[in-house]
Length: 150
Image (cartoon, rainbow, N blue to C red):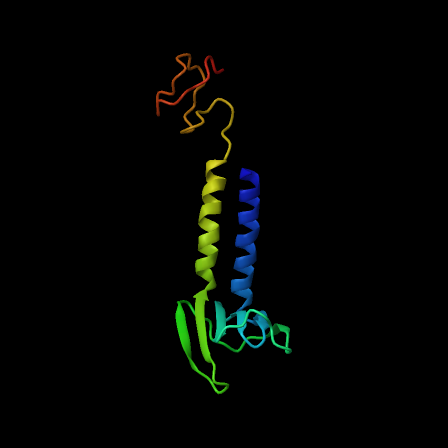
């Protein structure tokens, strides 16, 4: 399970990092017409929807977008909304992708750090050199040490 978390988190973090950097040049995402959209453009994840909400796509269906980005690279959260021409209310939430990279990357880095392996003869807790230690206790941190480490 731990290995799955480590590698899954690593892959997710790398993909988010690529999406964040790549969104400077390319806009990508999808639209479930006419009610919802999710795109990555200019360093932001934009989640938008129209009210009244409809979970079933209209006859227009779903559209995937891959186009040139003309949006300025953004670094912070934003919110936009209001009535539009069709009589609906549009709501847009902008989340900077770097925050998602941190949300995925920091716990993943923590798991990798905790899982690092110590060389033989070193304390598992603190890394102190236990060669010649016969007490069974690490003198540095008090952790359990194997007896007669040579």
